[in-house]
Length: 124
Image (cartoon, rainbow, N blue to C red):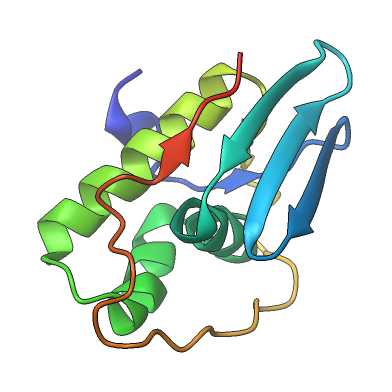
């Protein structure tokens, strides 16, 4: 799926449940029974994607938290968003659905913390 397809932003569908435990998350699509595991960095990216009106804003916020080149961060965020849209764990925001939920809390990162270069682990 081309990265441009997620530029307008994504949201969590009603049929998706997210559970976080110790910074990691499991996403479950109740309609297809597809589930997906996210590490701490992937969980943070997912949280910001659903809290932001679009991918651009999510990347701006995440750039403040992670020491990574902007192009690398953007690529990782777009790939994760596209993969989650493809599996039905996120969906595109409609033009009427541009106002996101309340902003997510910002997470401070220690120097040397995980970088978003390996954001997900898919669980079959």
